[in-house]
Length: 192
Ligand SMILES: [Zn+2]
Image 1: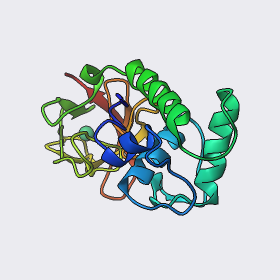
Image 2: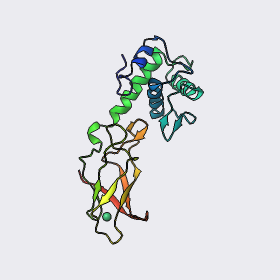
Image 3: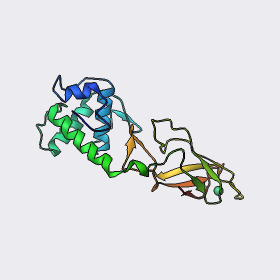
Image 4: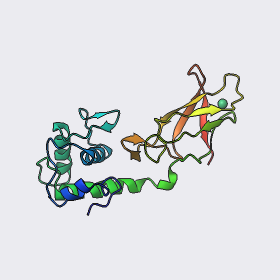
């Protein structure tokens, strides 16, 4: 059984982990996308199969090569096929990676974030699954600065934890506020 957050809900991946049948070149779908996401999160880029960090769900040569690189790094048979041993090794590797970031470090809609002049950063409804990401829109309300802060630009979100290929925000994230004209007005302050 595959155990990681990224894999365990996919019946197709669970079947492939039992070689019934393995996943290989030309397969398409959600399970391939989950595989691609794990590969990218583990540092195996898919330049021809992803746009802005979102994988396309096609087991193309790009994915085949990334699987081969992963296999090479993990002393597995280097055939580019996502079979039992490869999928279990990926599952363990991605599980260890998830373990690096505690879920309690992640920002939520209830987190209190301010501009440096006391205005409030309006936490949006997450668009990409349950977590807030650097790609969501963050408006600033109630700033009293002479050129008021209007929105937030995240500079460092959180490279350690991604959801669907996107960077989530946590308490170590760094952002700046900008005015209506895009001029930086001060740092973002994460209060709680
Ligand atoms: Zn402000």
